[in-house]
Amino acid sequence: MLRFVRIIATDEARRLISDRGGRLYVSVKKARCCGGTMTLAAATTVPDIEGYRSVGQDAGFELLVPRDLGRLPDKLEIEARRFPLRVEAYWDGCAWIA
Image (cartoon, rainbow, N blue to C red; front, side):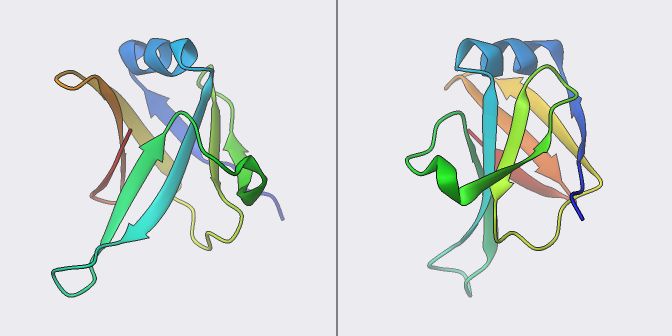
């Protein structure tokens, strides 16, 4: 069953994602230090789009996650940040940063 994520994004984040192609790719990465803790990463481009699936389009951009990502959040909060200019996405107290 295909499930979608409710996206809550600021206007500035929507504009930044739109300016970078209209897609936000989100993935989970395991840190090499600190006991192998999980971190989250977001980007507006990826080298292998075939490894991703679309899970949300209701915020003016497409949200994609890895095909093998098991658990999806009910909602994803997305904000734009400066210095450096990037997109940050929050899910269950963790941050995805692009």
